[in-house]
Length: 451
View 1 (cartoon, one colour):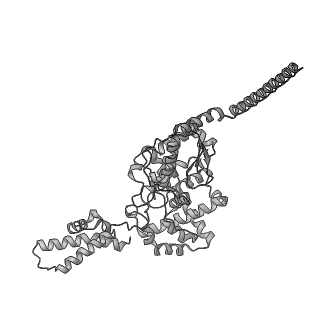
View 2 (view 1 turned 180 degrees about the vertical axis):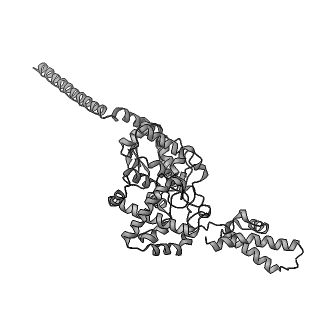
View 3 (view 1 turned 120 degrees about the horizontal axis):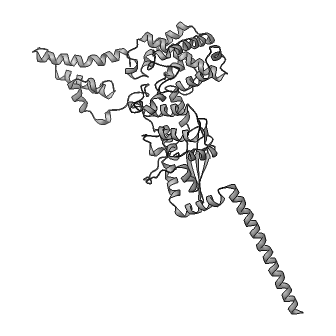
């Protein structure tokens, strides 16, 4: 939203208040019915367009808003804005650290904090390297940002940029945008420049984590202008990460009422004859197939390390943003994983199946982390409804469960299976030998009587 638009919105209530005051003091200024209808029409259109905040409306505007057809009110924000993490998640002490940058403050929300002073110098060097390697002129880059500044500003919630001047924002966008692009380029190509700048590997890991924090984002339009290399316009890097996760993921919406689910952990599923397999993809597609009395649950592979919790929590916070209309795919995926993982043994089974790769530490830590992340989340039942419904149907059939449990008990372990095969083979040989000896004895007895 431009400065002119903001000033117009702020001025409108004062104009109305002024005209009301004039009438109250006995002003002879006459307002015709046509003027009143025109003004009400303008007020109504502003509300429909989302340009008139309810909290700042004058009384006539507020009353006019109540006469609107509810269907006329619509979302007009073209894209979800970069804003602070919703308070519900920020207030949780267990999650707070996952939303705070450790090394790099990117964008206006954490800019200028004393703890990031050293990082500001590093970013300045990276930005200078970007300008040098691309052959650009810093003045040209600055001018380009200033020309498009209003486009970049509407990508942010008003409260996070209102304290910055246009010059401060342009400088920030130039340094942060150029430094991020050079950082990504150098990491992909071996990290030679980062080594020259004496940025250690542990700091590189923290920076990689920081650039995907919800409050640490730049408009992707800014990066597009800087690198002119894009196939699909995203909103920011976190949005790009989410897009990669949900691409080719078409959840099926069932046309019937769901089973009353009892979410089962991995060990319960295995005991019910469910085999776990990795899909071999990074998208969040999950499926369940039945084969006789066995079932197969396929899940995407996931590497669990120090960056897993921050990424998942910031993706969840992004999906929960009030201006982002989405199907909560990542949130529902985390809820599904949380339902599978209750104990360290569940993590162990997922590791054995090749679905989880644990770089975090013990299985207890992984189980505890998912139990914490999945706390108080609201999932979208439509996302994995077809999977949970198929699992519930499978687990509710007692005959199948009995056969599956028998199979699991007698054939679940390799040694048990080998022992069974050996026993079966010995029994078969003994039976065959016994039958042969009985037949031979009968034959010779019959022959001796005949003679």
